[in-house]
Image (tube, rainbow over all chains, first blue to last red; front, side):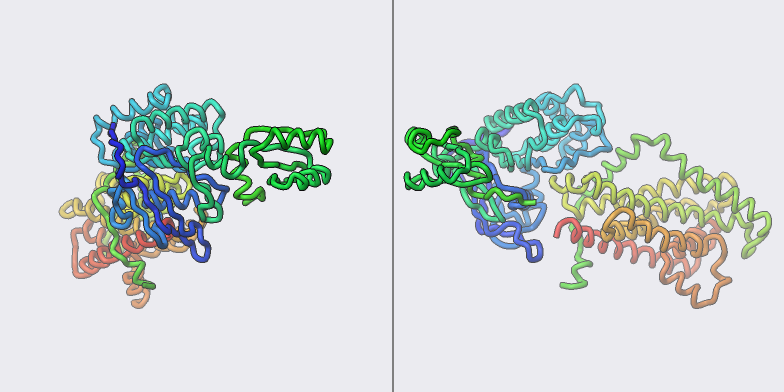
Length: 312
Length: 263
C-alpha cells in the first residue's frame, strides 16, 4: 500500500477551475471550481441531474470537458488519460460487473486491464475479496449475488490497481443499513491507508459521517462548500423547530422577527440558534400545541439550498 | 471537421489485446459446445445442397456442385461469425452488460476496446472457417496445394465483416434495429455473391456491381481460387478490395463508436 506524507505545500490531488461540460445546449456542469487534497474524503452532494456524475466522469478521463481546467495528481487530463486512469479506482453508479464471469474472475480479468501480473493479481483478488467479505462467494456467478454483494465487489474491483484516488459514484445506493455500514467501515480504513476518496451521494447521513469536506451541487453549479458540521451551522443553525402550518404560528414568528422559517406543506421549519427561546414562545405565548425541536442536519441544509421540488 | 472526423486515425495500443483475452476467456468457458454449430451447419448445407440438390445440378463450370459450393460455405461462415459477433455480441456487451464502460475506466481507451472486439470477431471467423475447411476437406472437396492460405484469409475476411458489423452496432438505436442489416444485407449477400450459383449467368453490369459493392463476392471469389488452386488477376483485385475495406470499416466503426459512447 502507498504511504503519503502530509506537508504544507502539498499540491492538490484533484484541481478543477471553471470546469464546464455542455451536451449540445444543455449545460451539465457550469464552471465549477474545487480542489481535493491528498488523503481527503471529499463528497459531492446534489439532487439528481445536478451534474455530479458528469463531474466524476471528467475526473475519470472518460468524457472530455468543454472548457476550464482539470488536473489530476499534477497532470492535465488531456494527453495523460492512460496515466491518470492507472492511478484511479472507479466504482460507478451503474453496476457494470462482467456477468460473463464469476466473482473472482471479475477481479482477475479487471487486473489484466491494468497489466498486473497473474500471480500478483491472484494475491490481490484474494485480499480484496476477504477485505470486502466476499471470499466465500468467489466462485459464484455475478447474477447470484445480492445488491449489497455486487456493490462490494464493484468497490473491490476499483481497488485492484492499488489506486491513489478512489472515485465512488453513489457507493451505497439501494443497500440495507448493514451493507451500508460495512461499506462505510471499509472506506474509513482505506482513508487511513492514505487513499484519497471522492464520492457522490444522496444520503446526507453518509456525507456527514464520512466526508472531511463536501460541495453541494445544483443545476451544474456548486452552491455551497465546506466541512459538513460547519455547513449545518452556517445554513441551518443549531436546531430545527417544526410546527404545524397555522397562520397563528406565522404571526407569532413575525413578532419574534429574526427567526428564519420555511413553509413546506403542513409543516413550518424554523431554523434557529435559540431553540430555548423559540419553543417556549411558541407554546406559552402563542399557544401552539404541536411543536418539536431537533438538531439541525445536513439534510436541512440540502433541502434549504436545493429546494424541495422533485427533479425528475 | 465534418466527414473527415469519421476517418480520424484511431489510437490503438497493444492493450487492445486485453479485450481479445476477455472475449477468449468467455468463449473458452463453453468451448465444448462452441464448436458444434459451426461444424453442424455447413454439414447440413453440404448434405442438402451439395449432395441433394447437386444430384440434379451435375456440373457448374466443369465442377461438381459440392466442389463449387464448398468455398462458399467457408466464406459464408467467415462472414456470419464476425458479423454476428460484432453486431449482436458487441451490442449486448456495450448496451446491456456495460462491459465497454467498465473497461474504459482502466488504462484502455475506447479505441483499444473496439479494436479488441474487431480482432476477436476476426478470430471467431478464423476458428469457424477452419472447422469448415476440415469438414469440406474430409469430403475431398478441396485441392490442398493452397488450402492452408484459407486460414489467414478467413481472419482477414473476418476482420472485414467485423468492421461492417461494428459499424451497424455503432449506429443502431436498439438491438432490434440490427435485424435490418441482417435481412437487407447479409441474407441477400449469402444468396447472390456467387455462392450457390455462378455470377457469370447474370448481366455483365450486375456482375461488376457485385464485385465492387459486395464484400462476400470478393471473399468467395478468392477462397474459391484457393480451394481450386486457380488464382488470377481477379483474386488480386479481391484481396486488395478486402484489405482496403477492412481498414476503412475498422477506422470508421471506431470513430462512430466514439461518437456514440463518448461525445
